[in-house]
Amino acid sequence: MLYRGDFVYTEELSDLRICRDHLLAVDTTGHISHFDHASTTLSRSLLSNEPDDQIVLIPSGSFVLPTFCDLHLHAPQFLYQGTGLHLPLMEWLNEYAFKAEESLDQDADLARLVYTRLGERLIENGTGAVLLFGTIKEETNLILAETMQRIGIRAFIGKLSMDISTRPTYVEPAHSESIASARSFIDRMKALTSHLPDHARLVEPVLTPRFVPTCSDALLRGLGELAEQTGIRVQSHLAEARDQMKAVQETRGMTDLEVFERARLMTARTIQAHCTYLSPEELSRLAQHGTAIAHCPLSNAYFSARQFVLREALDRGVRVGLGTDVAGGYSIDVMGAMRWAVGVSRLLEGARLERSGWQASGAKDREIDAAIGTRGVHVDWKEALYLGTRGGALALGLGSGVFKIGAPFDAQQIRLFNPSIPPGGTAGTGPLDFFDPGSFHLSPEVVEKWWCLGDTRNRTGMWIQGGRLFG
Image (cartoon, rainbow, N blue to C red; front, side, top):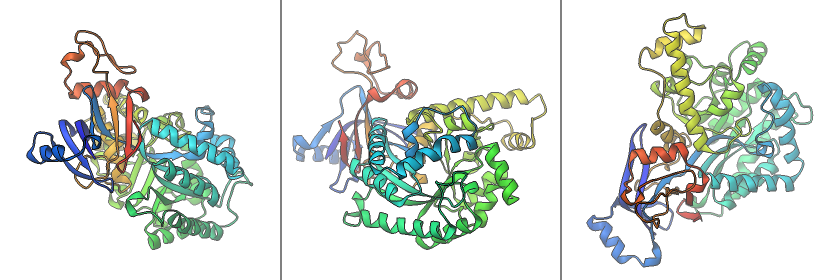
């Protein structure tokens, strides 16, 4: 299959690449086999030898972008998305999260309904890969995996491991049973896609200790051993909120980072969400481990008194992607996460400048100010676009997020305006307005306009592993 038109992607932070009138070829396994300007000799040869019905022309006023990657989303919490955000974290978990998760574990039909709609919403919002927290019960997580595989989304499925809970009916009975269930889930997930060729296997299991307050030391050690034995990825929450940090310190006598390190769960195949309370030295430890961070700026604004210093993490070599954190975050849209990431960084930069003539408010503030110096902590929209595409893909070990030979064709088509509008008129799809579309030229400013204002109305097509999901 051939695609001709304008392509946009970011291979590195702030490295926005606008490839005008390029030709992209996709092979039978869904990988990119050619990407170059349409005027090259090889491009012209491919175009002349391909049947017309195998050539997709991206119209003027549209471009193709890699799909988004969501590094942190609680699938069962989609049930009550957009409610209950008035409570602090630990109370919110008891009042909303545990109840919703348990209800899906008790009702397979409800789970199928919720997860099918979740998948549809992810596609609607351009998310092609997602790292999911599930529930405790194996069967419910298999429903989640089956649904995502059928719908066509790359999904990393985390069966929760938790042998401690404030809700007596929503907990695993012992650490040994929790570990056995995690091992069983890995085997059943592998069996789920064993009949498919490698490139068609879109779902993978992930070891998922919920967070330190719900996991005994014995459980965490067992999961660390299982991760070493199987090479399966690990996800959890780290240094998220003051009440959570206090609970860990009181029960373990150390930070949750130290707890995870002792269990050998901080590895290059680990993704930790939030990390708002990590010091610069602790961020450096994550970089040494190779552990990635799922930055969730929206939910952090609700549940953490301290915001994640994204620039400091990036400067210290930590791999970072973005997470929506539904339902701690009320929006499933990665575009919202990108915008929040930039906005929060601007607020942090403003606070830093205000502090420059005053004494920093705490020890960690002083550490951060000393580490950053005068270079600032804000990030820009191009960097956020990288985090929402390539950055998240790299954290998950995926080759997507770029248009390069050998990468899977995971892409979305964005329409800025309808090119049939006559010159001199106004045009624009959805919330966008262009006052002279006849002189349209895809530029960084135009992409920025979409980044700031665009929504689902601008998305007119999507492909995962070369397979068209819509459009």
